[in-house]
Length: 243
Image 1: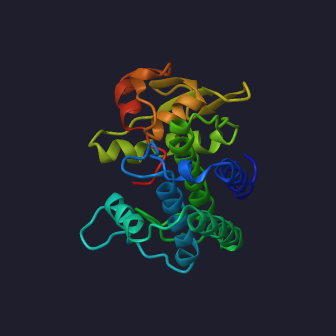
Image 2: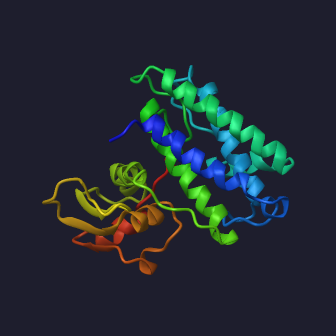
Image 3: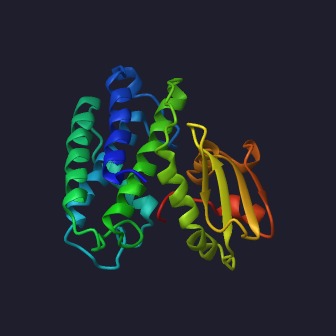
């Protein structure tokens, strides 16, 4: 695995290059995130990046909530309250992303930082930020017809989806069982996650596996194949995010 913080910077730089090419009309157009424009998506990324420096000194168990609201509801409320012009949103995100990476690099690698559902170590938090930026980049690029090339940084996202399967099973009331995933990388290499002798096996491309986990692709619309006792359940609960 390469430097996770460097890969986060690279993923953000790829997104920044795409955003820098957009017209104001494109910034204000609908994204694939329901109810959000492209500018709203970037505002959401800026707001969550700004939370990282604030989280550096907080290791409590609480997640993000506004009263009894869900995490998703809280994120929606934040965006609704702080909508601004595309120029202002873009500058805010660029500043926030650089401060966030600097915070993660400087943080104690063993000390967990407060995050959405539970505290995370800096490297794990950086992994979730790669997944978040990649998924939202697709939300922007897809409706605009812009190519957003997959890279081998998907390895981090695939690891996250596989690593959190026990958590995802538990949320659905399913008794966790070992799952092995054998995925083809964008570069053509084979990535293996988990015990190869696990009873449930998943095979396909990392690109589709990660899109399923990011809820950007339905398992039935993919070529990912799962076999074994939890085949259907694995692809149904797979998730690249923390709540």
